[in-house]
Length: 216
Ligand code: PRP
Ligand code: URA
Image (cartoon, rainbow, N blue to C red; front, side, top):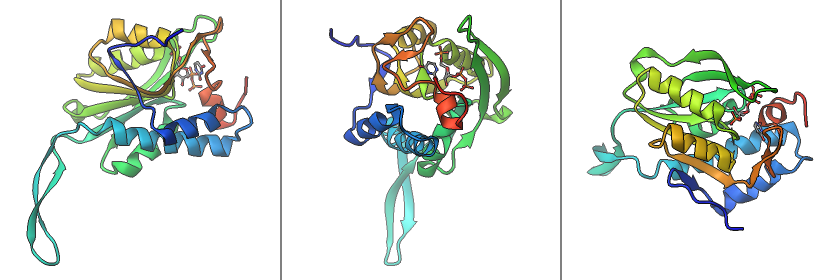
């Protein structure tokens, strides 16, 4: 069966991203390697996701003469990881964009209802004019992504993108209904959710694998 296509979704199928994602999915991958791979994939994704950022001319003095180069124009980016697992993506992106600010949204998914429960929100007040990248490795039912985007919107953010490593069609559809103007970037659109709301084939519980806590 052909994978569904969504107007809000971009699948980043760069060979290096796909190679690293396969290792990440492997249940034998250690916590140390998992952490490193999440960071590396986030770096590669950032390269693709930022390719349409506007640039402007800048005068540069080389050791030999003055020339006109280009620099990224406009407001700086703010990275907003959803705790816990989104934290694993921050350093990888910040390597490419060291000037990025970091906000945090604390959400966990209730195991029985699968609904997101929020416990933390910190975005510096003067940040609302910036571009926001919400970071979370997993987009499953979409409850957490929708809640995070709504909270950011409520704080005044206008330009938001959502970056994840693995997405389920259910979550992409839910974001399309709730926030159709937020582009989603993922390394893979997986098949479906299981009865417990886990992505199939997925990679298991991203937060647990990243932090070395409980495993499936
Ligand atoms: C995971 C994941 C997402 C959420 C996705 O977090 O990192 O935030 O589940 O599921 P959803 O799309 O159905 O909302 P979890 O709730 O396990 O919290 P944790 O990162 O603290 O382990
Ligand atoms: N959260 C995860 O960490 N993994 C899933 O498969 C679904 C939600």
